[in-house]
Amino acid sequence: MANTAKGKVCVTGASGFIASWLVKRLLESGYHVLGTVRDPGNHKKVGHLWDLEGARERLELVRADLLEEGSFDDAVMACEGVFHTASPILTKSDSKEQMLNSAINGTLNVLRSCKKNPLLKRVVLTSSSSTVRIKDEADLPPNVLLDETSWSSIEYCESLQIWYAVAKILAEKAAWGFAKEHKIDLVTVLPTFVIGPSLSPELGPTASDVLGLFQGETGKFTVYGRMGYVHIDDVASCHILAYEAAGAQGRYICNAVVLDCGDLAALLARRFPSYPIPKSLPNIYGEQSYDYDTSKARALGMRGYKGVEEMFDDAVESLVGHGHLPTENASTGSLL
Image (cartoon, rainbow, N blue to C red; front, side, top):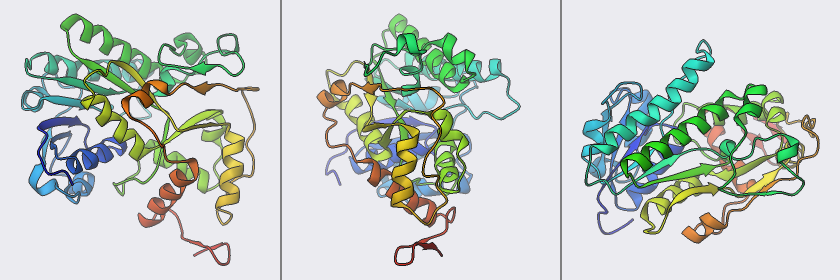
């Protein structure tokens, strides 16, 4: 625990998968955290935040909605830093246009509130590595090392109907345009696929995909193909470093390891033999060999990333603990 308070920061969408870990680490570092959620009174959604060390003394939860103009004004005005991790709540009935507009307008809504606070030091926006890596083969040569100057092809994402990536690209680019126009100190963090324990018993999309793989569902990870992976605790650390480092600027890829989906499945099938994980997955994209240049994040202080085994060990322990997966019997290799 830190001995000194570090000031007040806002975390949007505080009950989310990444945001909850960020709140946890910020509290442990001595910050006063003002978290925005859609319903502060919904204990099922926010109860895990009140269980965090330091929460009773230095956590406030207030209502805000990404799609309500001015909804974040009061929260942002009370803080000297903002971590914008929230994503709009989307349903299967939402059209492509609704999804894209929600992502862009939600981000701009938060930044409009940030513009009104003259004492705001910095905004850290959670983006995604999907804004960097999705290109057709002509733009993704063998063994290419992708860095923060790379942007995914919107046209290629649209041809594959990867609307999540399109939304992330458009939202981040809109944020950069707004920040430049209004002289906001903006830094973006681009995590790869985030693995690890969920503080909330309710699973978000990422943890649900991992649960599916351990239940024998192959569709999602087959579509993901070659992918970077990173522990959620490292993602939280990267956000805090990006906020605290005086010279931080631009985009930061946060990644520990890149694996083909088949190699990941084989590794997990060996490590967790009791679960119905396929020993291989089809390669639907042909040979991919890209990796990430993470030197920019290392220069911030990101070193010693947790490995893929620890990521999934922690994820499985969490899924078992929350009752989503049966317990693996290490001695017999069966499920309890």
